[in-house]
Length: 262
Image 1: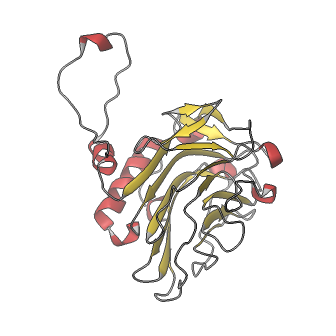
Image 2: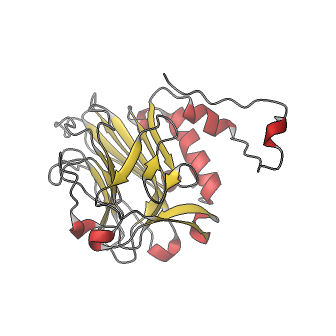
């Protein structure tokens, strides 16, 4: 059964003394969207001994290599909000969950960055080669591929010191097309329709590294190495084809983490 988020009026006497948390209209609308299948937030349900739990479905991301997990820290780069900071090499803290991704149209949304001067995998499925992945190059460009097919040129990226990026990478099964959108429209690039001919085949989700399908081992040559991630959302639709929902997601993340509109 799906969880529905509502804002209620009045106060519960049992909550006296607890901090007030008031979700925005955009948060409520996004949460209740049927195509949102995963939502991980650093401020919610991260257990440094177990992993990161999805606030939408309860699915848990667990360590790719036990016991290594990222560290939750409030960072000025994220508008003084919490983010998960990843280590390097075999202790980087990459996480994974089985059967977490749709196998048709889908969108990865992430606010994060790789380590300084790093070539790193931010998020993707469980395949080491030929899978779907978002990676940030040492040049700071951000790339996205679906089943090894890119079609989207390296999108503009920031230096590490300039802060994290809102990265939205979509695949449309209907149009056989990828789209990459960065920082509320600073970059917005699509491949030619009909060029992304391979439908995703791996439903395993990997965050902060790149996994091997079925084994959940990690490719240590592409870890975040000091990079950080605050939120991950996964949708079962190509978000660039839904401008109303896209605008809500960008406004929510941009306003929260201090990334202004273009």
